[in-house]
Length: 304
Image (tube, rainbow, N blue to C red; front, side, top):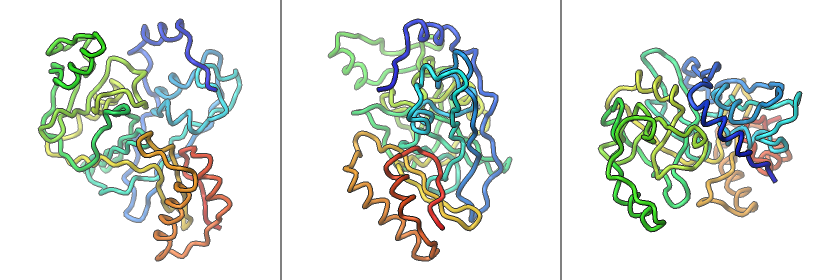
């Protein structure tokens, strides 16, 4: 069972909420048409007082991603000198390479900026259980600097049933959960926005919106234009090629889509066989089953 954070750690994290910034922002050259794997994973040595939340923000990774990749390490108290995998290599989701792609299963956003010929990728928070972020194609319809949060009736009613009564709107400032930047999706109530609670990034904590670290949303806000397409997908497993070899990346499915191990095996095997019809890779089934069972969220070689 994973250790829980101490109250002291949470207080320190909240106090330093906007003082820890990424020094490893993931900005990569746009991949070629036949490439589907980007980035490189890192191995770092945990220092005294390190934790996954600190490492995630430092390396533009996600808390959830670090937990998947380092299942045997305490996320809150890794041992001094312990090797930690920073999973910053990704198979691109199966979606058009145009605008924004948000993959709910991996809690990650990708932005294809064809103007600068760069690909930007960031960890995100998404809708919690019962408030799942809807999949589908949208566009950026509005960009809002220092937005007011006009609280949807559904959210106010939900909290009222718990004896918590929310105001109809929240002005810009430290108490506003949208942070300083927001982008509306297709004239709906759903937003891509910042946050005043960084512990919600790379977790399912929202009422359906997509949240980013403050520095990440500021960067995205400055380069994304109105009418940019947004593809929201839910892909727990991804298949990709690199250097004429085949790779598989599997994440733990969202709770609503959890399957039995046998069913997951069948889904992945079917997808691999379908993908391999035209490629004719020699598949290593022992490796494939290992990747399916471990679900570490790391691209792993599965061809001989």
